[in-house]
Image 1 (spheres, rainbow, N blue to C red):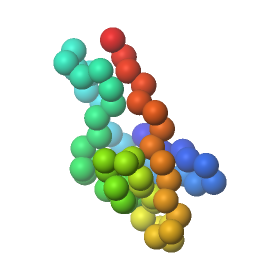
Image 2 (cartoon, rainbow, N blue to C red; image 1 turned 180 degrees about the vertical axis):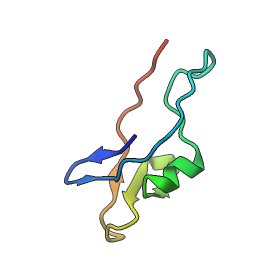
Image 3 (cartoon, one colour; image 1 turned 180 degrees about the horizontal axis):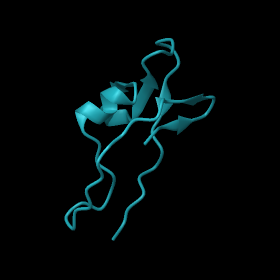
Length: 68
């Protein structure tokens, strides 16, 4: 699994995928977020960056995609 964003890509990491009948969107664990090099800047507003990027390089989350 990896994260591909505009002008950047995280290293690929191995992860187990679990499909839950209760969840209708992607859920990522804190461990996976860390392995992908993601720094959460403002979770409520959907702001993040890669840890290796400057602090002023803030990205916006993509709109959610739901599976039902």
